[in-house]
Length: 60
Image (cartoon, rainbow, N blue to C red; front, side, top):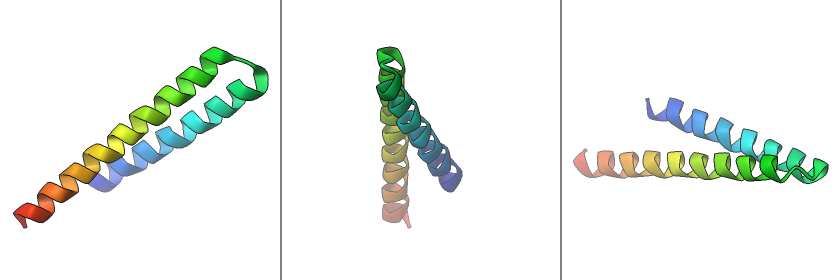
């Protein structure tokens, strides 16, 4: 399930970057903030998967 979660986090990161970029181009500060929020959520998702991998390596 880790690969699927990483893919979702990557997709959310890309979505956030696009949304932030559109917000920058249009001057929509709400879209910029929402895009940055999605990127932070994606980074948290990747960090969680990194911890899971590290724990799995220790256990195995």
